Image (cartoon, rainbow, N blue to C red; front, side, top):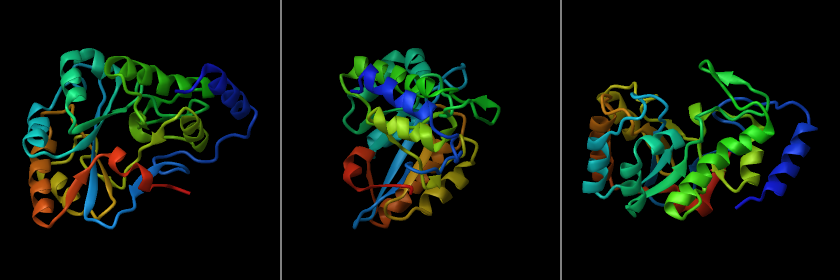
Length: 246
């Protein structure tokens, strides 16, 4: 677990550095794939919170994963946790799932307040650390485990924020396949995205929009891939083989 002093010293060094050069989903240091000699892919699901709609729970989706023994990494925001404490407890106690960090206030991760989709990012190195560790502390308090993976709200970063994340003990989990585009894809499109996966791909979906086509698309796509011999892994299962972008 990072200490306050370590975080402060890193923040101070970043503050004195040049302005970040990168901004986006795929910046230096973000993990987007993993290396494997098997037919394996990783399914990841975000739960954002912050409003009645975004604090929902796709029961059908999670029940499908449980009934079919499909492991997954769940990126959960602190606001969703506070809105769904009993559900969170059940998810965290299920060994099929790995709980990961989706941020404290769902901000993009920036050292200078850069925004995307009209959502303001964190505005300083200190706020980057707070966005990571506020929810990290909450998850650790509730589960006894510090989450090792982080994905920001919007999945946008600058390269300095990614460096701060690494110094605070987390990997930035990006993705190689956009699974449901913020839960806006139809079921057939979600299935198509899954079926396009290759060994080592990381896919991103959402578990907080039961009105979307995600659940149906997942069941179609997962069934198809399994018939082709694919298996599914949590990010921690392949932690030694993750590929960071250069």
